[in-house]
Image 1 (cartoon, one colour):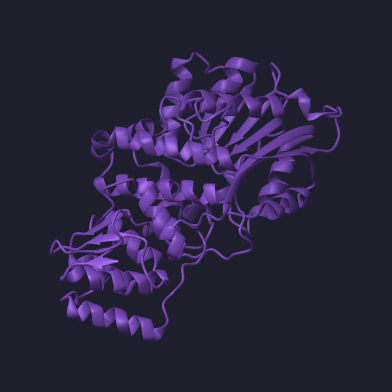
Image 2: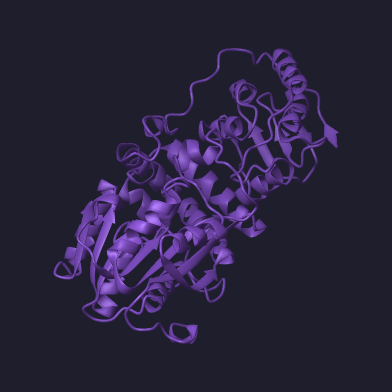
Length: 427
């Protein structure tokens, strides 16, 4: 390891303490221009002493994330390479609890801050941190609405730049890495329709309908009558416009509604694509039972959800994702999800794991964001764009490492006609 005299070598030591490693797999550049770390390693730039103060007061994933969102730290090269290096040492890209330094190590961090003139009050968190969305009773209707608003009501223009024309905010299904994002999202929407066995005139509930892409696809291509629900006012507004522009107002209804308040079943089929992560572990049994009650006998539910693959873990409310991206969101294991669905009276027909597909999807979203960076910043804020860049790049690494997955679980309510004998009916 080569070093130059200045702040960087001490910063390298401080970061090693936080990451729980002897040496750091990064090249650091400090505010005084000094550098430390392996030559050729991904570069991370500390623009100010404030970054070190953030790490001192929150010595883990949260402090590093706050420094990045605020612009105190920059990763000017390949964002994936930088986060992969951090993750290899300190699990930065993983959603579980981050290692907290021992008391002795905290003293060493404080001593480094003294030597570098970085002592001072704890800097205020960036304004993009979710604070209002984390007040009140967890998973009450009011708190859930605030959490959804924090994530989704950040500007439809911003999302259109990141997601592309499909406006689908969930894992796509890729025939190959060269498929292209829009075609892969179209394939995913069609796969869900086929798994649900949609036919003209069927009544479908789309739980967490987003900007209406699945509802539009099901109505336009399968003749279904779709009720889409979301808690995001901005999503609902654009979804209704898209439905009107498509001339499908007689087949698609978009509501701003909590899933717990839907009382006009039965439905022939229910899609829940990327929504159950917002429900929470304590609520998931009630979610399954409620959707069971909204299905007519023989009706099917397709639950598409991210899973936590690295063993049981309690949510860490002080990690980056809950603070900045998905307040109160919880990833369950596949076993937990299937147990809840079966406990709700639903029969499992099929399970399909799509983990590699989400890594490709996230990399495509990051590319869109970086391609349209200036427009995305103008449509939201610099901090918000940095949040999304960090969370999507780190999440892609989590899917590639296998710590997170995503699964489509197809279930049915008893009664009605028997389902197809083989899954080839929808492949």
